[in-house]
Length: 128
Image (cartoon, rainbow, N blue to C red; front, side, top):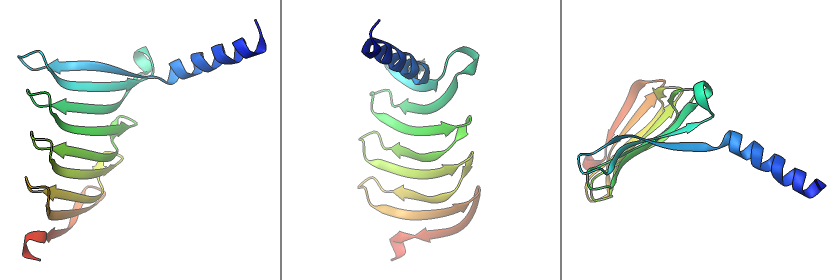
């Protein structure tokens, strides 16, 4: 085996060990996916890294990420027409940062500020 072939093979093996695998965890009665889970790793070592939930129409309802088995990063939610509904920011399983609520026309109408899962400030943008 040439050095080039060995490098390509070892890179492919390394990448396949780190690959994310998609699983349809639940389906709507119309057989469209309802919950899709993305796992990284194999067998008992696999961990959930992302989750997507869909409306019966097939439109994305929300997407969120996980780190070490808990919510982490930005979670985004959508109205059935595809307009953003709200966003959350998570750190180690607790809401942390700014949560934004959007009206159906796409305008932010409320901000919720969290610190380690505790609501510390609310801003009603409809009164500004």
